[in-house]
Image (cartoon, rainbow, N blue to C red; front, side, top):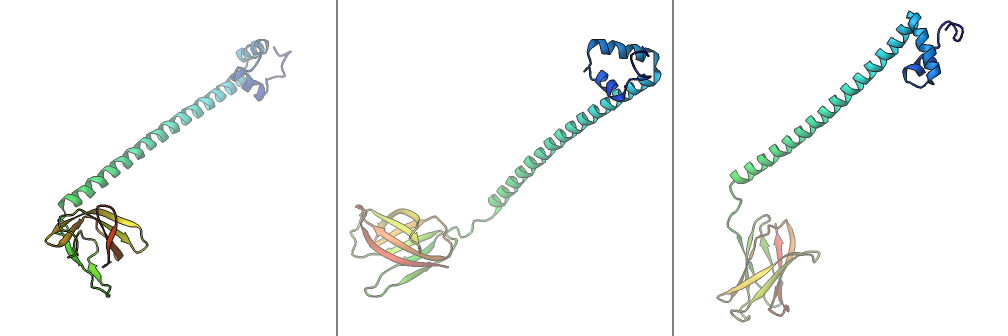
Length: 196
């Protein structure tokens, strides 16, 4: 045995032995040396202990990280659920703001352009003054913003020479145009409406 090795195999050779990277003939030589050399056996045990410690630590960290990820996911899910419940509680227990729609009278006088005022954030009941329109006819009402983008489209009904339309959408402050159309989609009137 001592004829083939220097007094002891090198640390690199012991490491190769430990990781099973040596040819069988070389393994037999090292094992023969380990039988008689306590220092080399202790060196191999230290490598074994080191490897086992590193594997255990890696496994502990992986398990810990997985548990923390799971824990944070659960916390996030519970937080989101609590937020939804709180929002629903506020929504359902809060009294309705302005449950009745605000009445807005839209009329035109020849030669004078009027702008009606409406409250922001409230549903509206539009009273469209149109005495020359045919009673009982179906009408469509379109609401557009100052840039001409459609905000709301609905139907209007005739009530004693006045066209009524319910706008459930709550509007933000700004200038709007109310357009009245007949059944053939021809524009009959346009009224300005300032929402404040």
